[in-house]
Image (cartoon, rainbow, N blue to C red; front, top):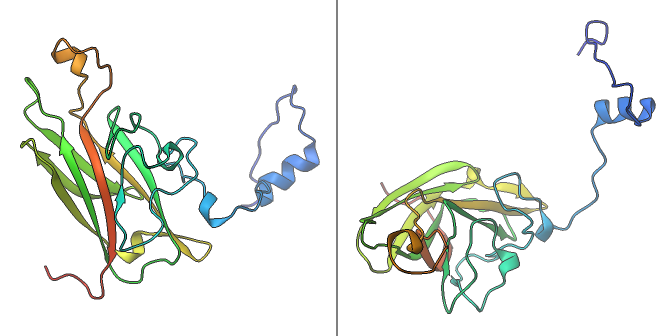
Length: 206
């Protein structure tokens, strides 16, 4: 940018040293070094969560009380036995693999929709690192497997590994207290049971 034609003002009450101000403007702030497992959330709604929910491909990770709330991002109810409900209109978590996938991966989520009187179905939209990869309308009250293909170029590459921010958008989430005599104030849409990601040896056929 040509400094002869670019101008801005610094507020009179600023306490920032002018030299530091111009250094940061030109070079950007100095960020502390971070380990791979403490990669920032990239702004996809992970709150203060720093720990990945899933760290290896080919392994099924169960939700629920055996896990750690630090592994979950925004939008989760407290863990129950072998399951986690969302609490809100979105739920997010992080996947951090030791190496970035070079082929498409298959992500499998086993989940149960919240259906009740006045709640005939749950719409589920899945985003991976901000890309919309799947949509389902779930209208049967049993566990279902939601499957998506993740192309290798969609992964964030960090410190030699692959980082993925998974977000489920659940616009039909409803508080049981709003539709029944229940005292449950959680806004429920989907009961998450297990998550698996597989490296595909070849590109899946259409």
